[in-house]
Length: 189
Image (cartoon, rainbow, N blue to C red; front, side, top):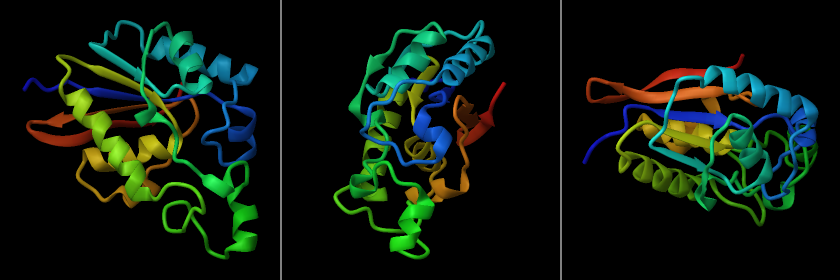
């Protein structure tokens, strides 16, 4: 099996809820005007790069970011954001008033996904990327992409908590010889 040279991770641009710190999974918010501007900056960062495969979450904030950088994605539910269940739309501070010390990576998510369930989806995306005959671009969301990167380098899914990821950021997963590595992380323009 041929390996992709690199896997480029692109987190979508700003939305109203990403700006306010609200957990946004299934709520299908558009980009703000700032998010659109951020995507235009990402386009400059991708000039000259070609991809054998472009995958995106089907949520409009990811699809819009992908299209604004000039790419046409294949949509996959596996790149959707972590399902926050009952915590959808709440900030971490609001959740911690109910559950002191709660974090998305270590706490329960009522009626949502566990970190392990999100990792199963991330692993499927990695498998699909590995089957591609060239570089791959993945357009998605903060927590899902952090878990995907942790899985890429062989860490437990919860290690994604150590990988901060800004809106409209670019990260690159690749290899050093045969070892999977993070080549670039959380680059913004």
